[in-house]
Amino acid sequence: MNDALFSLRGRLTRRDYALTIGALSGGISLLSFAALSALLPLSYVMAMMFFRETAAAFWILFVMGIALILTAAAVLVPLLAIPATVRRLHDMGHGGWLACPLLLMSILPLGLPMLFLFFLAALLEGMNRSSEMIFFDSPEQLGLMLGGFVIGYFILCFFALLLLSAYGAWVFLKKGMPVANRFGDVPAEEEIPSVHAAFFAATGQIDRAHFIFRALIVLAAAGIIVPTAGQTVLYPLVTILDALHLVPAGADFFALFIGGTVYPLATLPLVLRRLHTLGRAKWEVGIVYAALLPNVIATAHTAHIFGRLALLGGDDLGDIIIDEILIIGTEGDTAFIALWLLCAALSLIGTVRLLRADKSA
Image (cartoon, rainbow, N blue to C red):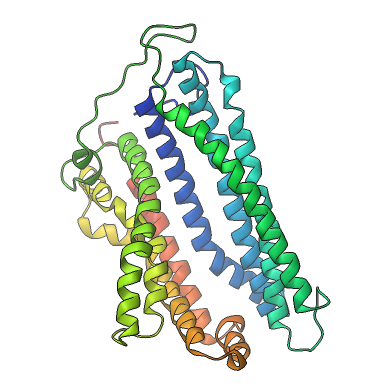
């Protein structure tokens, strides 16, 4: 485990570089998940308290909040990786200035807010019940501008990511110098146990520093593997069952979305070990993961709506979208937001308790 995540001095081996990038990515993933989970109830509360047109205000706050969170995450990952990349370059015998491509990688996501603005404009046009459009002269103009921007932006991202992928492969795979160089001695690697013992064993003890570092690495990996497994394995299976009418409407969309909702559960073995280390009961794991409950409920409800939309004809889509998606403020909505805030508070308390200092400290 590397204790100096943001140091620009010294050298870093390939293995420790990969672990450091994994921990940084896991941290950003966790913060993004928490921010996105808090965004919906906060947008709801602000829309109900401070705006007369609650539905429009909610969707503006919610969509732009998503855009800002995703943009911040995409910008922060390469920026936070610069110190570790500088030390990896040092290990190869190169100067830290070769980490400059990461600055380019942090600029690309700045186009995401514009993409979400177009989406928000399209959403507000859909909420408009009058025959006149709000932001555009015609639906064709909206489609042309949105389509043109999306195509241009993704072409730019494709070629930039192609070059950055080659750069990343070079940084990750090139061996370091086997002797001391002007940046320091050959870095020593901490001996770590097997993958199962380090990340997936639910018994034994684990100190706070190793718990944090390993949990972040698991979150980074699970944030990719679990949603991908849901989309490539679970989704096709449920789609077949849906075609045979063996599952309720929207089950295929639920299978598509659920991986991105429950992937933090991959840290369960580490959380159980940490609870054991602190002398706490295993049932407290429910407090740590309480915030996942409203996320799963929201995912199921969203999947149900998409399932209904898929069964409707074009003439019926407008009414169902307004009735099911765009109208907020019902008693059910308020109760659900209260549940969401309660579960979020429980998870925050549970997480803070996990991060208490070790007894021997």
